[in-house]
Length: 464
Ligand SMILES: Cc1cc2nc3c(=O)[nH]c(=O)nc-3n(C[C@H](O)[C@H](O)[C@H](O)COP(=O)(O)OP(=O)(O)OC[C@H]3O[C@@H](n4cnc5c(N)ncnc54)[C@H](O)[C@@H]3O)c2cc1C
Image (cartoon, rainbow, N blue to C red):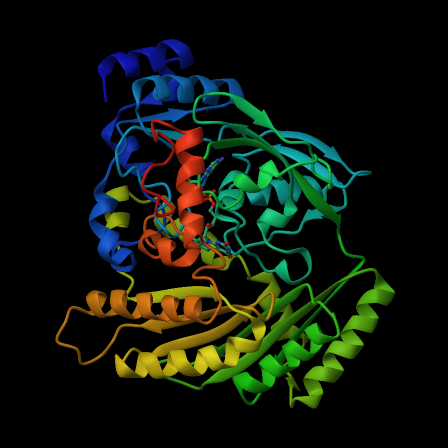
């Protein structure tokens, strides 16, 4: 990157906010995508930003984007850096824009049940601010303590409460976005968007390719008068899944559905449904009564309150561990982290889930890839599987995994589903986007070219 541009950034923002130090550049060039799980994109994980800018206001973001656009230099938005698809990797170098300084709570309007906040605010900090007002956010992912509002919107993440409140995108009412040529677009923070196409939607799940989200007005909810939690064991995945489907057929929507069949390499197979019901007292009592009745009719055994409460209390433990063991470590060690497992999350028509599971199982058997978990999260259509390293193949295990992953995701697409319900596309799944969107991909490219003629905003992501 041109030295003159760096000097201009320093002149505009001050020395303390612009860094070209190698350690800093490396630290902000990675997320949670380890090289084993990046497959063919692994070599791109070595890309490094030329400069890191720590922005603190929309004006600063707009200045940086305007300069970069004039110079044709890439800009990569960086939230918490906890994405698992390589979304923040600066594949063409340029400026990484650290947005954690945009962390102000602008307004909590309890009567309107909205919160307007900076995009760099951590979800956990937002939850605490809302809690002080008797409110809560409907998006509660594992990574709540370490992910930002802007990152969650840009990946359209899913959390524990999605059953009742939906994914992060459904929490968004209005957005403030710096467009790729430096203009600042604002959509209104009301539940009925302005007439015409819903512009906020353009930026939900867009992984920063259409602009930088700087502020969001979010829908928030009263803390439930009552939250009931249950842990239930089933004899089979089919029995538990049928119980969940029966609840949905009634339009009974538990706030939390976390249903797993665990198949550990050693030890007992377990099929457990964690169920949560939120709301006012009478509503929760009625939903709980009917929901548990359905589960019992499908053979559920109650595992007790202690197990249910412990599950809820420890739901962010993986993020706390990640913060301790990974976020604090030098980036080079993170890049080469090897975790020979793969977690895949597809969305399917609910009526196809059991057939998909059966066909996936046959596919994985063919490659001797063991399944460690089949799961449903939030809604019956959100299906995931955790697979381990293949055994007995002459090829490198990551090559087999790469092939298997493409086939598992393509099968979901062929059965009317989508390739990812939770983490976005990033670097890792770009090669499947043409297959995913068809002609839609041409439309995405045309919108991108119109908004961002110099292709500066997070190039190389989402398959664009
Ligand atoms: C331990 C752990 C647990 C996780 N659990 C979950 C989970 O339960 N549910 C879930 O959905 N995900 C989960 N994730 C993945 C990750 O936390 C989410 O994808 C999260 O939404 C990313 O937020 P972030 O702030 O870290 O974004 P980043 O990783 O910084 O960025 C993600 C993408 O969004 C873009 N971006 C970031 N901020 C902005 C902005 N303001 N404007 C425009 N573009 C932007 C980036 O360029 C990148 O493409 C988990 C990750 C880890 C490590």
